[in-house]
Length: 282
Image (cartoon, rainbow, N blue to C red; front, top):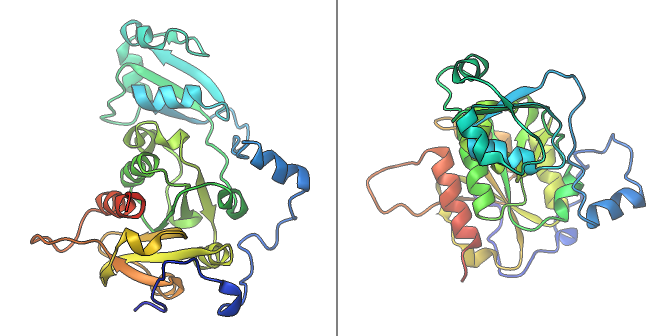
């Protein structure tokens, strides 16, 4: 049940909601230089350590996007002779290998298209980092399939989403399967990982985001009702849906218009339809 009906003007939360604790309240405050760096285009998205191990990204689009991302730490670039021709002029030169070697390096049944890249995972952003980015924020409540998350990232990139927010312990880490399904979007859409999803949503609300949970039985999602406001769109796992505390934290519950005979959509398809509704011209 929605707590408040959305209006066309952005809400002044100072009059109806006490500012919740930040999702990063226990972390040191950011310096003015750090804030200035973000304003000048540095996202703060670097590598998450220097273990020297990393994981393998495969597929043309995923590899091209990773090579073009200056924040990526790249260890190895392998390609068949045929595939290497597509990467002439790339910032890294591939080592030529046979297809059998790539088959052994990649995940089982992976469609690597003759190219692999061993990389370090990207560093996640913080709540304050995405406030300065444009577009809606996608939030996933216990969506665990890396291919679904990759497909959601692809839609997020297509529709100009600011970031993807997940709960750290209930979401998979970066992987080749996720990168392949994202078709390059893993290096385009920042990912935030938070310990407590409800507190993270409250932190977004404190920054004037309107939190919309997508679930069956909600009011019809209508992009015209969100003109002039930032939206955080929350999607739950297939079958389970939104958890109780997540649902209660949302400002409203909405559902996508489906005049056909199906009761629900795959979570990645639902994300694409909802994002289109939020960003389409009105």
